[in-house]
Image: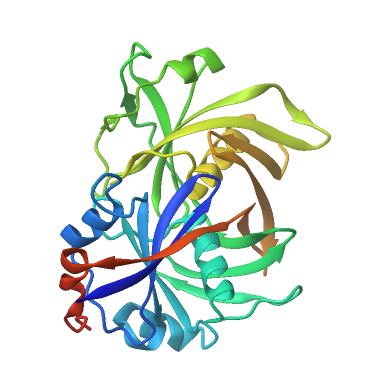
Length: 303
């Protein structure tokens, strides 16, 4: 009987199915990934992460050539089976998985280099969770119009790239944020070529407290739907509000999502502005999937 061992992890409610494939022997077809992530017929998750050594994946080999310490590559798929660049909450869940299973070590003060399709991500322990250097970010601008039920007229958004594409929309009140219906993907005009995650954000009554910015966010993730959290979405939202706030805006932000609280920090690295994401990540449970959910994974991976 064919079996596939998996681990279920979550990071502020953003949940993932993780599978270990150090030598790159598994093929993850989109239909199988979607089935594994299905909450009725599979394990259930917002996405799937395959742990594969960088040397056994074409994208990983290219990245490791420039970053020899990036032994592990985070092969991330959205819940619908589509391939994504990376996932901020997923990086922390991946770090928890690697360290809990003994595939990697990360002591206090050490750094764990992880390869992603968006480039290198560097992880450090921080309290009970992890802090991830998400690298440089880019303001796309353009003010695309975003339409979603229950908020009336279309609203202008701000395009931000943090390794994957986002459009951030400011709302007027928490009541308006609560009324959002995000079951269907918001309409973005003009439509981004590769789609985008869409975040809706509201500042707290007192935006800045003790030098820290405070905002609340909900998100519709490309290829998934509304999720309890989105790490890159929290980063994009903090960067958007920071941009709107102008000179004097803080560099540290607390972002409340339905699944908890994330911290976003902007700081220079070698003269380039990087953004850092901090938050928890936990292993929920492990298990084995049998028969038809695993059979598609028996073929060697395409390199």
